[in-house]
Image (cartoon, rainbow, N blue to C red; front, side):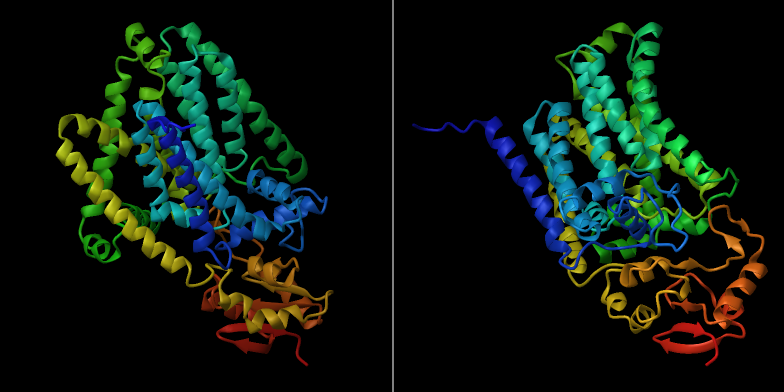
Length: 521
């Protein structure tokens, strides 16, 4: 009996292979585990706290208070994996690898639906796999890979809602995934805004607009309200953030431009040359302007019944819905990040992980542009595809080579071979540890630590009262032999602050720029 391999079957087999390759790529690029940062330790410690039956708590700190700053989604999934016997530190690597593969498959499905072309879906999936910026996001123990995956599921459900004659069940499913995304990252608010605006624009009567928006919000709000009530009850704050105006700094914008330049030009030698020119500023402005103009063109006639039926009808499905909502999402997400940085958390920076959800939407719109160009000038489209894939593969090979050199962040040998950490590990259990690297000390000693007194609050960008009193209390405990002060060279403590904190204390140990102060012998 001969098995006939149809183009459709071949396409789905290829998509499955791309998903497997994506999964293995993360595992291959992280032989020593995922990169680790302060936030990574917070997620991992929170998951361990859940597994221990203590709830979602700040186990990396001696205070061990309830976590309200980070939503619980990522830690909860790590805790579920932990029930299988895998510690969250190791489980994060397998989770992110799996998420890279699953998101690859989802993008292939979304590309197929929006283009009504299986090859288009494969191209979109392949673009995701070979993108070095998105690989690096999945190579760090952070919540963005889970957030991206849940967001893509939400876009798929929203598309099915229009394809299946506006059946409310698909809208509820979309709302559930948006709620789960919010519990993974508070930036999920951008998804809420995106779909509410899309429902208002896409429906042709106010009754349908209000009913659909009501169904969607009823599916989302319980997640958000439930988490807010929990935080208020256990922590006295809805999200552990205060409403304070602190404009985004020029240094933060420089960080954004650098990460955007890496995304747009993966070939590092060329990127360095172009970075010295206004090229990336103009390219960023041009891309955002093009997306905005495209959205406005698509949105202008949406209230007209004929266009609405075409756009949401069963035959058209995601051909317009998916790219349109992703275009809206780019600006909703940017607005939410700007609001967060300016009003709620000045410590947030335009790092790669923050920008990564925008990159995924831009890849979707790039394929849409490619489909349009294919109809106009095929030879130009072929040249563009070869160029994009060529640059991307070059950047991906470089990224994998870089990641395989060793662990990133706290996973580096500089930490697990640290003599300073070894010294702290040998301290009696009843001696407190004050340090400017609480995450690293928790990771390698298993002990909750105390944060240092600080005269400046990085979240509100304002002076923090009680600094002198805090220093006096800490030094009194150290001089009494009840605590030590560990100042790591890598920590965000400048020389003047370090001098104040260690004034009058005995320098008991020094190694590679790290210092440990104790009571005088």
